[in-house]
Amino acid sequence: MDLLNSPLLGLVAYLVLIAGVAVWTFGKNTTKDDFILGGRKLGAWVIALSERTAAESAWLILGLSGALYAVGMLEIWTVIGCVLGIIFYWIVIARKLRVISETYGAITLPEYFYKFCGKWGQHVRVISMLIICFFFSFYVAAQFIAAGKVLDATFGIDAHWGMLLAALVVIVYTMMGGFTAVCMTDVVQAVLMIITLVLMPIVGLILINSEGLDVVAAMKATGHTASLTSGKTGWAGAAAIIGGLSWGLGYMGQPHLVTKFMAINNPDAIKIGRKVAITWTLLAYVGATLIGIVGITLVHNGILPANDVASVSNDPERILPVLANFLFPSWIAGILIAGAVAAMMSTADSQLLIATSTIVEDFYSKVLKRSVTQKQLVLFSRVATIGVGMAGFNLACMSDDLIYDVVSLAWAGLGASFGPAILLSLHWKRMTGAGVLASMITGAVSTAAWKWIPGLDDIISVRFVSFAFATAAAVMFSIMSKPRQDEPT
Image (tube, rainbow, N blue to C red; front, side):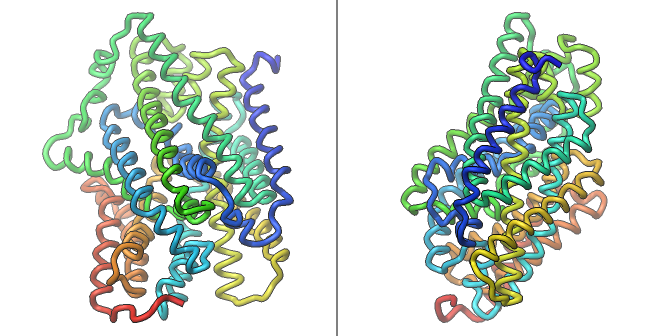
């Protein structure tokens, strides 16, 4: 293979750059605060781009573009819901969580809840740890599945070997550099992702225009892809809209995202970070939407080669790497495809770090009350990172589900378990530790029940139902319990 004329060139360059960041940040972790939260030293741009790439994983760049290609304009409701959810939690959650978490001296989300909940704190900490480890195992697995798909579609590498390569890269640089490495590599990944999501649809639309193709006609000719409800009417149509919009509820409860707010160097920097995050979001979501539309148009008009059409027919989530190879020279395609790999890594690394901090800081140090030095805690954190990463890889190898479906389960579970608890603990003075505990348990259990009992998720989205149940539980149990009389310990 001629490396200079191969998509492998862009991917290799990307991996070398990531390796350099890992080496550069290795010596910057001397305390557990450095490894887990970067010592609260990172600025607005770094935190904003890290939060955005951690949130918009392979689900956005592969899952959403693939879903839009498969079902059409119904996914517009998902886009609207996500954008509104991002704006809401940057305005309502970010600054207040940053201020209060520092006041509590909390560097993890379970520690924040422990300090808030008083006598219920230890119960809440243990439950939150279990919820994070359970749902994150699915979430990390989804990122490795994405890497397998990209490397298979682009280079013909067996999906399992692709997942192993991605897992090793993410585990190594997260283990070496901790939170600082995660955030710095996320900045690189944010740039790559936005280049991919902006450049690819522009080139695709130019091709469509030059060929005189009709986008609307293509969408109408491929079933219900032009319909905002995918042809559904009545309650089925309303439920489809609610299901899409409900994605926005989950942002408030994602530990790997809200922890970024806790790490910013100055609460006032949240204003700058908010502008950066919202701008990046609008560009990314419009781009992912247009990639799906471009794919529908080119496939319907017979522009793509037959083998590419067969590939995306079997798996719609391959539409992005297929378009990259078709629309661009090989070496440029490699850079853009690296954007898809970056999407996976930018989420997997943050999730690995949160799971690691939960195991080491919350369980080993606080629950078991083991006295260890800062140097030992950093070492244990690195060992835990390896263990969590390999667990996610093993789950990915056993899963045949689409990225969209796997992320949907984890997103709903985390969003319902933590979203209402975070929102109400920050903004409702009557919220109690009992309310937090009830909300977490209700969110996790209702997600599992609603998702795994056949037919319920077709009636109305688990993301909406589990969030509503968890909110109701928080309010009810807070009212039934005694108000908090003093500040948390």
